[in-house]
Length: 126
Image 1 (cartoon, helix red, strand yellow):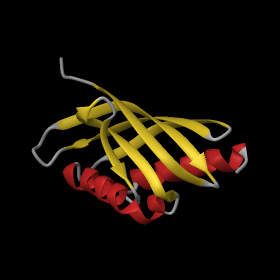
Image 2: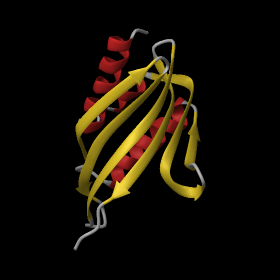
Image 3: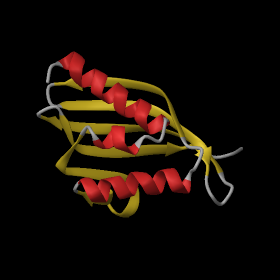
């Protein structure tokens, strides 16, 4: 995958997250992919392995923050590695309004995502 194709793929994935389009997101994820979420008891957060597990994790995000938006995205690629910066905003099912500036570190192989490692900066009120 050349640089421009990789950038377009990351832009497409970001748009799909913003639109809650799980099918479009998963079209770009390898069968053996790994997603490391920003929260969890381990130093890497919570690790999800394989397409089914990753799809469930993303579906849970959309269910837990039904109006979640991913905007202000920017993407960088160098070889088989990439990075995306974005702002996540929404309201949780408990009524908490959130705004998070975050990034994903990507590993790519054969035109697909094999790793998505997410990091968040959580903005607090006040």
